[in-house]
Image (tube, rainbow, N blue to C red; front, side, top):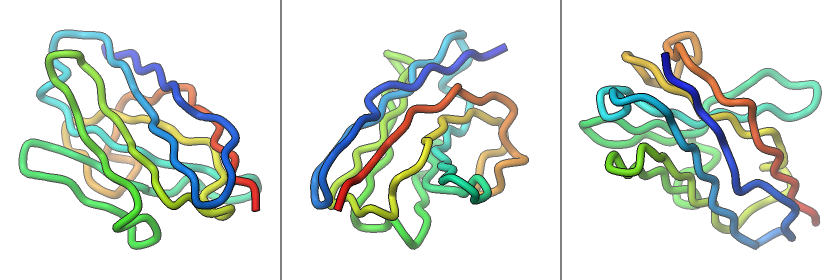
Length: 120
């Protein structure tokens, strides 16, 4: 079992930055692929980024602006978000899965989410 707790969300003006953190419990953190997804009001949850032992992958909408990283010693994954836009407003979720990838169905464990609001 893995428990995930996100933090770092908030209100920021367009063009600003935020860094999200996701702290994971359990000793097998390093074996999981870790992903970030987001869900805006009235929309489906969508892929943002994921990271595994090979590297990282990003959605086209955030490529060049967001950076995912992980610290296995701290059981934590991060999402650095720069040049934020109003359309980035959503609840951001951290997820862990053995398979990972862009499909949310590949993730077994989810955090509760953290709200990110970008004002214009």
